[in-house]
Amino acid sequence: MATEKSWLDALRVYSQPCVLSMAFLGFSAGLPFLLVFSTLSAWLRDDGVVRSVIGFFSWIGIIYSIKFLLAPAVDACSLPFLTKWLGKRRGWMLISQLGVMFGLVGMGCSDVHLQLQQLALFALWVAFCSAIQDVVVDAFRIESADSVYQGAMAATYVLGYRVALLVAGAGAFYLAEYFNWRVAYFGMAAFMSVGFITTLCLQEPQQKRSEERGAGLDGVGVWRRLLGGNLKVLVSPFVDFFVRNGRAGLMMLMLIAVYKMSDITMGVMANPFYLDLGFSKSEIAEVSKIFGFFMTITGAAVGGVLVIKYGIMRPLLLGAVLVAATNLLFAVLAVSKPSLLFLAGVISADNLSGGIATSVFIAYLSSLTNTAYTATQYALFSSLMTLPAQLLGGFSGLVVDNYGYHAFFVYASLVGLPAIVLVFMLMYYQNSIAVHNRN
Image (cartoon, rainbow, N blue to C red; front, side, top):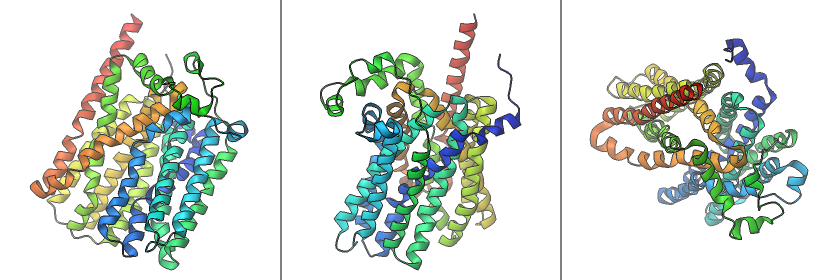
């Protein structure tokens, strides 16, 4: 039986190079996200574009939700010259980062009034390259280290990602205010060099290819693999998941689909709620940036340590319970006298629990993948994690309009109950399998 690690040993995981490097890759992955969403929306509105058109621009984000369709190409295809020079994973990372950089420069060069369609196409290109980068960075992380490090690597990834969100949000706004939006997007393109340099400095992970994966694929051209009728590239990752997990595979997919549902459902109406309480935009920004940022990072770090200390399932349960519970704090806030201090406390609790849940959940998703199909399987999981929640979140406004904020936040909390139940069921199933194996 393995001895339990001390807290000091658990904390030392953050000194590992594989863990530290994920902060820089997280920054590179997070930077483009706001630049095709809320920051872009602010730019469009600032230049007088009507809100209906700005709404159409939000459809660009669909690419992030269907990025699992891009993953088979990342898993199966080699890039001329780049794969030979850097390896498959680093080659894909480099080309996607360069693509994002090019797209941001193109966006900065576009005139909102005369070249709106061109701006939309460049934004679509940025989202496309960013989605590919997400897929390959996830695969690189999973293949670079054992599962024991995945929680901590997820935590540093979240750290880098959150810093990038600050840069792409507040940083871009400051540049636009003191200069203009063109300079802002040129500056963001320059920040993508962080990922570019990191990719060149890292070592390619050792990929373990199964015999089944390699059969019939070696020596076949890229396009023939994907378009020549070879369905193995697309089907095998999904068949492999159910072969390895059996009947529990469906339960695992159900958990993935509902685990973030409570958090995302609540998040849809968070900013309108703050405004309706009477808080100014500057107060909301200051509280969410100061408290939200640091509490999310703290929560992610705590989640990584908990995975090292206790494994994945118990922290996974804790994260699900905390996310559902903190939504009840918003329900209390909804019927209380508006207080900036109370708001800061609720946002702090929400971001702390969200940070814990996110880093632990990423570690859980990572543990479910087979290194033979890392990119495809992880991208499928991450897409399944967000799509149902986004669909349900679309009805949040109707709930608030008909029943009020207090009922909405209670509803958002109850939405988290299926995740708690499914974690308990999976823990029971795993314990039953362990007892059966011992006997």
